[in-house]
Length: 140
Image (cartoon, rainbow, N blue to C red; front, top):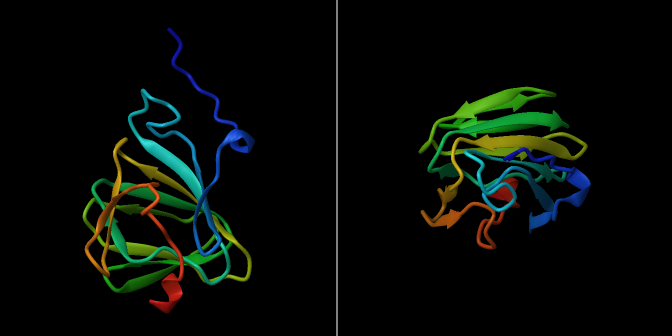
């Protein structure tokens, strides 16, 4: 049995995450039922980003377009084309678009069931669920 999948980006249903942020779920338990990890891309308009949050799993993010920054433990690090991060489970962090063009990231989680816990209120939501909204991170 061949369990290989070709994921065509133009056939992925885009998820609107708030404030113009868009996500393309790629290999997830919804799209590849036998996957052992979760991947996708998100695009952040100028001045937007994710609110401070943590996950129940490890995360790797690579900047594919634009410029941005990552904040971990109060330390802000600028990110440029193809810079990558590795963030262990349980570490609060966020990504923000600090450039003049949209910022595109590729994200990979080491599990198929991903949750996000927001630092502002401690609420935990399932990743990519309707409650997993982004945006307005620069004003928080």
